[in-house]
Length: 165
Image (cartoon, one colour):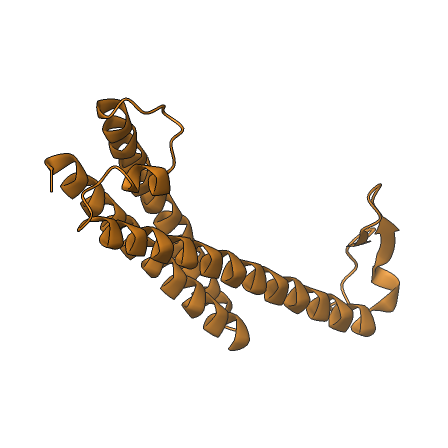
């Protein structure tokens, strides 16, 4: 196996590891949402943002290595990893195919989990707004955005009780 492929394989392994870490953070975030723990949700969300930055850096390094390999073999810059894998020795191709497949699988799982968490958070906010609206119905106005979304607004803040001093 030539060094370009060893480097590319290492980059793919790193990327797979980072996607796995991102997926674990999404799982943790979902647990925190279901447990209704706002502090942990915020902490996990910050960790997800940091992991996404780290993942982006790892992906950029992998893309640079893939570009270098493609250039070394006279292929255009936009050549996919699967296409580049055909240039590898026969004994290396299964490893590359497996890494590429697993990364794609982790990408799809991460996206699905992120969407689930987003829906859970949106629903939690809706429930909270419904509770507040039930407690103080006159304090909220429903408005519609140009896209048809419903938004709640508070015209002014009036405390539910006033303390006498």
